[in-house]
Structure formats: C-alpha cells, structure tokens
Length: 434
Image (cartoon, rainbow, N blue to C red; front, side, top):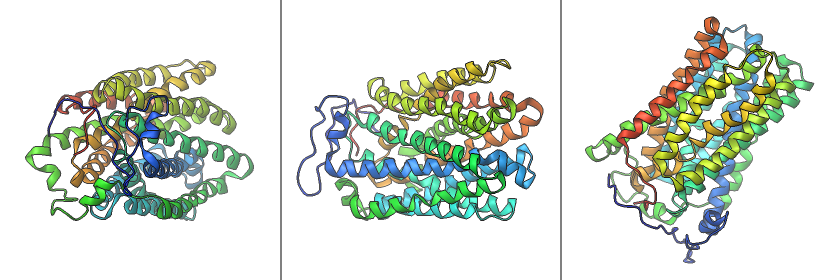
C-alpha cells in the first residue's frame, strides 16, 4: 500500500457534471459544503441508517435486566446475547462489503437496513431464550454491514482535507440512535409491565424500514465507485485483500478493530446493568445517567472527527485509547454513595470511548483501493467486532465473582491492543482515494 505524502484533496464531481465545492471552503460546516448536493444526500442516508442501526442495537442492552428476569438467565447467558450478535455481524459486515463492491453502495445499504429492522422486530415475538438468541444473531447480519457500507458511501464523496470530520459526523449518529433508544426505554418501562416492555422495545425496531424508501428515491453512489462496478475481476474479492500488497494492512486493521470494539462493546453492553444492579438506580435514574454518557459520546464523535484531520488518524486513536482506558478505571472505582461523581464521570467516559471511533471511517477507507474498499473495510471492521465480542461474554462470566464493575475493567485491555496494532499501519491523513 502506497504511503505517499499527503496532498490537498478535492471532492468527486457530481454525476450530472456540476463540480462539488472546493475543499478550501472554510468554517465549521465547510466539510458539509464540500460534499455537494448528492454527497449531502448520501450523508443524510448514512447518518440516518447508522442512527437507526444504533437504536436497534441498544434495544437489547437496555432491556437486559428485564430479559434476564423473564427467561431466568444468569450473567453468562445474557452476555452471550451480545457476543452472538457481534460474531454474526462479522459475517454480515464482510458479506455486505463484498455486495457493496459488486452491486453498489446504496443497494447494499438498503439490504442491511431491511435485514436489521426485520429481525429486531422478530425478537419481540420470541417465545424462548433460544429463539431470541437466533433472532438476535440474524439481526446481527444487517447490523454488521450498515456502518461499513454507509461510511464508504460518504467517504467517496468527501474531500481528502475534510474526510475525517465528515466521517466523524456520520459516526455521531450512533449517539443519536443511542439517545433515542434510552428515551423510548425510559417511557416504555415506566408505563408498561416489564414482562411486555422488552417486547415493545424490539417492536419499535420497525422504524428503519421507512428509511429504505427514502434511500431508494434520493441517494446515489459516488461517480468513481459507479464507474468501477463490474470493471475488474478482482472487484469485491476476499482473496484480493489477502494478497501480499494488502495482507499486512488487513491483519493489523483487524487487530485495531478488535481492540477498540472489545473495549467499547464491553461498556455499551454492561453499563446499563451496572447502573441498575450494582448502583441501585431506578429506570428513570439510569436514563438520567445515560444522558450524560450519551451526550459525551455525541461530542466525542464530532471532536474526534476534527482531531483526526488535525492530528492524523494514528495519533487520534492513540490519544483516545489512553484516555478511554483511564476513564474505565476511574468510572468503575467510584466508591459507594458517590453516585453524583458517577454521573459527572459518565460524560468523559462517553466522550473518550466515542472519539476513538471517529477516525475509523476515513482511516479504513483510505487503506484500500475502490475495487475492494467495501470488502476490506467490511471484513476488517467486522472481524474485529466478532473477536472483540468475546469481551462482553468474559465480563458476563467474571461478573458473578468480580461484580459487574470489577469485570468492566477488562475492557481497558482492548484499548491497549489498539495502540499495538497501529505499529503495522501507515498514516493516511490527506490521502486521495484510489
């Protein structure tokens, strides 16, 4: 993979011939102007898809305590929900990447949205633990593919100069979906009996289906990606990303994704349970604490996107890996009775563990050429997610002896792995997409 010096980028031209604005556009929203009309519609589609992906994902962690009581589950069994979702999502993400390279980004995006919406709703009808586990696994097929496809779609419209903050803004939609899920959770569990409330949460997962109609009518692939569809026998090939020129990149990108997502999903899965079971918070109290965590996450995504353009992809990841690990240790060692401090520290915890993700969309997109960008990004990101999924299950099994708070510290190990992985990857700030 070439590591040529960074050069100023220009946005791709609009398919109808009108050039996008030049990246010299300044101001807080210069990155948005750079996208051009079609790019902004692609951004809106990816933003909405990822927000609803997040919403559907968090219906499970927020309902975990009620599910455990309804089916009589122990911590290991509840942790398995997350692990199965994330492991199967690796398959869905890798396949979605190949599909995106072969039939286009927008079509692949619609397929992923429909998949996760249908099976999230199906979870609400599950009669047994085993059935719910199967439906949740199938939901992971769509969940795994949405981010990679949406990120690539936007990356191919974005200018090199602003690609980090543009993709960071897409990532911020995860916090928007998380917040929406927390609000719905608070309302549903306040007014509906717990035995039914968790089912209602899953049924609301039908919302993403409305997005598909909009995507079909309004969003198109970037010109360069459209031109290359079907022009090379290597398009969308798993073999290609393991050839000598890309093998090193693929292996270290998987390790990077494993570390960051192992740490993140440990927290995303177990913090609601930790707040309710060990800190004794009510449904409303848990929602209040999550407000600080999610607010920090939203600002973290935006700040991380800006810093990944200013500092570079690798420095941004190192900075927030260290800060995320430190935040976990601080958050889980707050003494009993100091719940006010728990609330305050929720903001930097959400900020740091989200800011580290902001560079992923741009970094992974820049590591691969257009013909296999979907395949490379889909495979590395989601394989890392599958391996990192072991972390929440380990926390579940360790929780019985260590307590949920003590076991959460295990997530800090993941961030150490991420720093190690950067040794084998090039810096790509300012690089034009090939």
